Image (cartoon, rainbow, N blue to C red; front, side):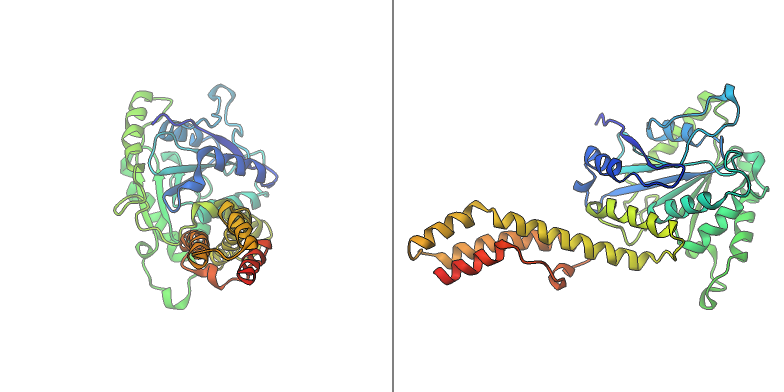
Amino acid sequence: MGDLCHSLQLIDGNGKFNVAGLEEFVKAVKLTQCGLSYAVVGIMGPQSSGKSTLLNHLFHTNFKEMDAYKGRIQTTKGIWMANCVDIEPLTIVMDLEGTDGRERGEDDTAFEKQSALFALAVSDIVLINMWCHDIGREHAANRPLLKTIFQVLPILVLYLTPLEYLEPVLREDILKIWDTVSKPQALKDTPLSEFFHVEVVALSSYEEKEEQFKEQVAQMRKRFFHSIAPGGLAGDRRGVVPASGFCFSVRRIWEVIRENKDLDLPAHKVMVATVRCEEIANEKLSRLACDKDLMALENSVKAGPVSGFGTQISSILETYLSEVIGSGIEFGGLYILETEVPTPIACSEVVTLFELH
């Protein structure tokens, strides 16, 4: 094992998306090689509640942590991303800017809601970190954000809070929020459990009981191994975007959210598949144009009839076509065969070979 932790500021405090940084990050962690075998975890919660500290102990990441001697000040600005160290499958974690901070003020909640929606749309697992004494409060307990969560999509919500005896109170609050959420008529009486898997985990205070906190987090860490396997934390996830389309997908999701448009995730995934499949087809056609065997066959044909020409050209084309189909299947089937793909010189060369032969 011995993975290295790579991190970046994915979205800055003004909402600017770090396109180049994400592409470098994806290469560094070899995400595109993962296919569907990767997981994304997001964490949200009040400012200075210890989110970054928790992530660093849980996933061995390197997020900047708050200096307790400086008081409750903003440490994480925007959204940061890192790969978890020595966890299979590859797991990416997003550290969101804390909510309810004085730096943005009570009237500037737009970024909080946008970043929460983004994390929910991208993540398989969402952690909500909060202090036990904040349970029952409005903003400190993330009630407004929870309402946003329940209105958007089903996802695992893992609540982290000290003191186990407060779990019933927390669950009661969650159910009340669910009851107030506007739902389609057909789903009006549907219970929360049909869409959300909620767990509550009690952790000791890092500042007061550091060793106990570390032991509890070490046990919790084990649950993130093989998280996407059946029975895992995200074992029942659906509609996963293949890793090769991750960069385009998350960038587009953020653009839609920033433009205050409705986030239609099923339509988004179809759009990602369309764009990515066209990219795959163009990439394979470009490689075909430079294929040494094809170029050698072309030279041979120009010199005269070639024995076994049909077999040779079929073998070359079948190799590239199988690669296109194999990559396209990741995005939900043979969609690639139905797209209109620009025809570069490679196709005209194959036609010329047949004419010469």
